[in-house]
Image 1: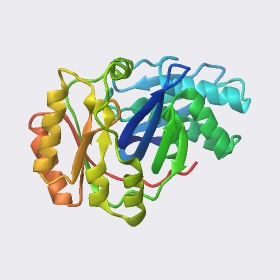
Image 2: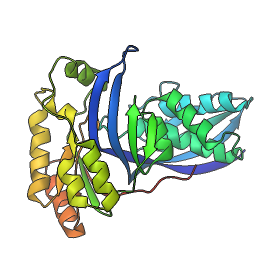
Image 3: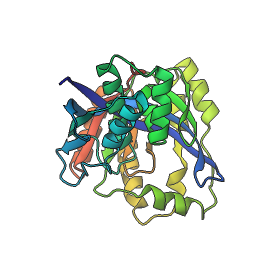
Length: 290
């Protein structure tokens, strides 16, 4: 049976705004999102007359239908009208779990990209993105990648000019955050301010990295949490080491800073690694081929 490999790239939020709560229980989001080179590595092998399953280097990651990548494979086969075949998905996870970097969504996106290629693209790019949106809110972005404005639940995408060439230092503390819990807390607080999304878009259009960095903002940092001091400490270290701007990505707990100097980025990562296990230097990714 056929097999292939695919990389599942992490995302960061250059900005994250919550603009309201919807009748369906979800929240309306407005986010500038960016793909970076930090990635999980996936190997896919087709198996006859077997359900899809995963194998993972992390023992606590479920390998059945609870795994978004397995669910994505099954939904792809159903949507493409393919019977009698499943996928064995071998996952080497390098994106930290519970970091706000869409690791699970990116794995799902990588699976449907890879399967679509293995079967000579039975689904168009638009159909693949619709399938991705049906799997999960961040999966459509992870299929497309690059620099995007995401609205709705996060599945409505508009392509933006690419983020200027820079270095991203990503640091995850030793705790994770619960996305449902954080949204619940968000509903009970009055947000102090919102990101200047249009200002970020204007800065992207003229390639103004400093203008982008100083406008970065994530409303979830306004949600009271006893662990928030750690987020603040990581941000302060990044800024002290020369980051042009630093914020938490997604619902956390990872924090990143943008640097225009490779040496400063490497020094920041080295400094943070003295206290935190998960610390990476990454680069921006362009839009992915579907």
